[in-house]
Image (cartoon, rainbow over all chains, first blue to last red; front, side):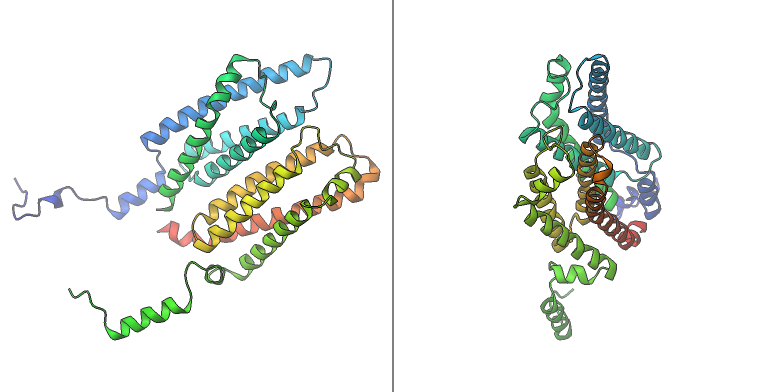
Length: 157
Length: 166
């Protein structure tokens, strides 16, 4: 049926052409694993921002001023900016590898800070959701670093 | 196909490998632009100056001069020194081996921005008009490495653009 029988049958399963590869890279599609990681990281960030919102609701009604509110506000801003920019780049199908690398580094730096100095910096430690988020933080970091490496390796190919 | 190299090929290979190693800082600086080289030297000088100064009490005295209590919501200077040292190592090793250089610069930029924002937010409610000059010098000192990092990223993105276009 048109299939060569001289040992060159593998030519039927042709590798991706240059044009196809360029198209795939231009579209900057996420792989299945990346989509899973993005879903997990987005859920984590949304829970974290929910915790931030609860914290801010508390400080507006509190009688005493919390001295660490500024650093909390800074972290909220950074998390929002990174999450928005990465999501926007994915939605626009533009390269997002460097942004993910930057987000992973920022998360690692804050983790080191929290681990070594600011022990009570995590929002509302008495909240049950905070406990879950605190326990999942190493997994979050690991996934973010892995995603950064994977995305950069795809984009740099 | 013969796997033996001709005499000319062997000589060319020997000559190119003896001249310079591609895993050397000299070679990897040489293939970059003059501006990138200068920015790289400048960034290293800034990082080394910070690391030397952080070993003394100069930084704490400076923070006291601009009237900001360091214990309020901002981490210790030692952690900042550790982070600066880690990124200094990463950027230099990445340049030497020409691997993850752009990633090292992007990471340094994000962490440095975070450090600047937290440090400046520490000051804003304690500043008075008398602190204008010490604070403006402080801001300028902070902005120099930031500008160098941005320049280095811009140069590196420009340099690697043809590879990505293919």
